[in-house]
Image (cartoon, rainbow, N blue to C red; front, side, top):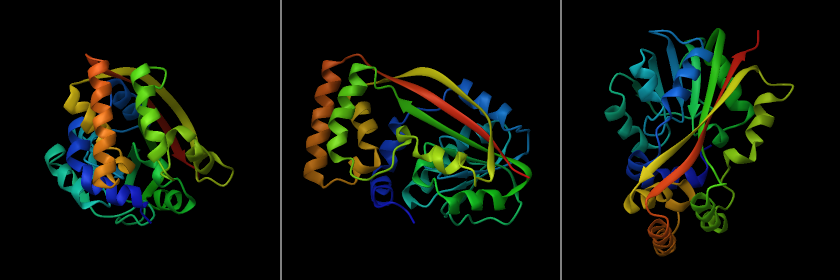
Length: 249
C-alpha cells in the first residue's frame, strides 16, 4: 500500500526531486559499503529507489543493483542515473524478486514510508543467509535558521505523511520480533549549496508539498522563494544518518 502523499506527490515532483535533493555524502556511502560487507558484484535490492540517488553510487562501486520503485515517474529517472541497474516496479511489501536472491537490501530516504512487519518479512525473504539491511537518510538540520523556517512552513500542510525524524521506524525494525539485529550506525554533517530555484525545487520535491492543490502549493513555494532571498547565499545544513543491520539466523 503506497501512501497517497507518496504516490501523488512523487509522481508530480520526480524531476524536482532529481534536480534538488542532495546526494549522499561519499563518507556515508563508504561507511555503508563497509558495514554491509559489500564487494564487487554483490547483489543489492534498493527498495523505494526514487530517482536512483542511492542506486547510482552503489552501482558505480560495483554492486549489481535491482532498483525497486512503485512510482513510474521516479523509475524513469533511474535509467539515466544508474544505467547498469535493473529497474523494477514494486513495493516493499511485495518485492518482485525470488527468495534468497540478494546479499543486501537498502533503502535511501524511504524506510519510514514502509516501516512495517510485512516489509521486513519481504526483506528477510529476499536475502541470502547472513544478508544485511542498510538504511540512510539525509536529515534536515533544524538547528539551522533557514531549515527551521522551512519546517515552520511545512508543518501545517504535512498531514499524516510519515517522517524519519519521528523515529517510529525504529520501533518496527528494532522490536523483539524483528528479523534483523543492529550492526552499527554512522553520521556525517554536510551542506548543500542552492540558488533560489533550487531551493524551490528542494521544498517542492517533498511528497506532501507536491500533492497540494496548485494554488496552495504555489503560495507555499512563493514563501520559500522569499526565504531564499533572505538567506542568500543559500546553504542548507544536513546530517546524513546511515544504519546497518544483519538478518538473524
